[in-house]
Length: 311
Ligand code: SF4
Image (cartoon, rainbow, N blue to C red; front, side, top):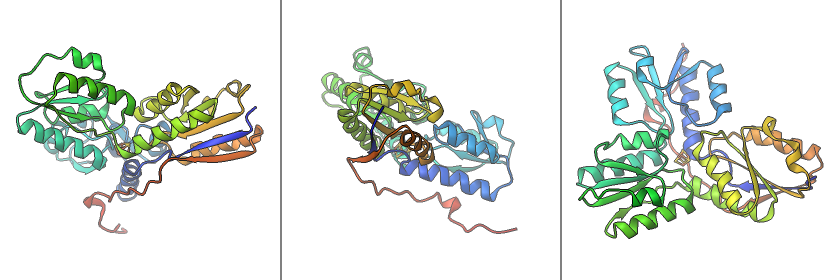
């Protein structure tokens, strides 16, 4: 059984997730439920379940929201088409899109306006990619691998490259290298965010020392899934779980050092349960593995800057 637990630092909540959760939390304090949110506020089952118990209703279409009601846009952002349809229904919008995702939207919109074809490196169908593509759907193509780049037909226009914020740093480097080979003049922005980059560096450091790495995060959380992949690529046995209940104690057999981390949408309390369980199983040493210190904070949207008015 393990005697040592290595804790990745940083791990868990990023500034964009903290902001999105604070937004929905404050809206639930101010409004009579139900409060609507477009898509999961962040990709974590525990967080979403907790908000549902307080009266949040997560929808995949603004048409599900009654006219004139309040809707919160999730951290992953939405396309201008969703904004337009929300306006048509006279919805009161509070936008919890992470500012680092908004930056990618603005880059995409400007590039298309300036006459570029946009290559968006990302996972087709992910909420963030759908939203960003919607800024210039006729000009944007999504590529997820070097093979996707090789299969592209030349659009005849200069190329501008943006990326999803939560990609694997290493996989993205390979895709961007292929883009450079095909489009030497391409203007390239690497938009993988600080939180994704730091968490991947930290899990790589864990994997160098731990025989087993456990990543906490939901299966639809892109950055959590990437963390497990990075740990596995670095040579550790790695599992992604939603929480303690999904851990099979047999994974600990023959393991002396366990590494633990969490995706950017995962609350600390889920890790605390796993840490307590490991202590009960005999872990005596808990050691942080620090690769970066994060100080990023985002302000709440202006709509929430007013004080709460008690009835
Ligand atoms: Fe923003 Fe990065 Fe967090 Fe996504 S992972 S919400 S882009 S800080």
